[in-house]
Image 1 (cartoon, rainbow, N blue to C red):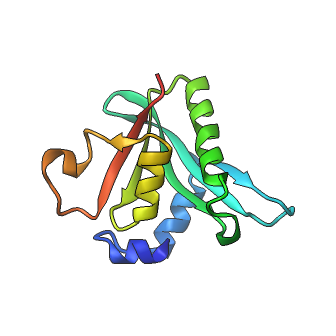
Image 2: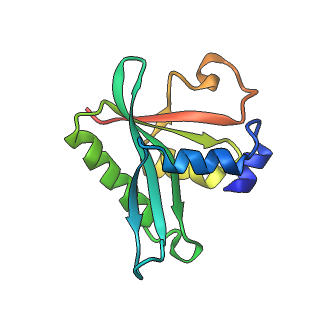
Image 3: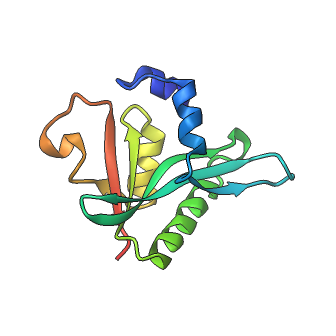
Length: 137
């Protein structure tokens, strides 16, 4: 993940990432097969976006030995259930354009679309990311 940040227009700042991970608003779904050993996690927050209550996916990580086995899909399905329970309008997330596997996962497997707030939705193709969304209503 760090390499994707470094290759983007954002860059990577470990201190900022640590602050982000431990902010009060951060919420997690964590998968541990062995206690104390995180195999996968989904970091999300409940936020307001353009007046709507949404769930924002900050990060999803699945350990190398568990990728492409449906775990990421299950984490996202759980987040959809949580979002619906709390009457959120959308799930939003940001994905790097160079992360082709993630773009395919979100758009083809999970049914996300490019959001109206994404730079490319306004003709700006210079940014290194897309904002994707999926309706929960």
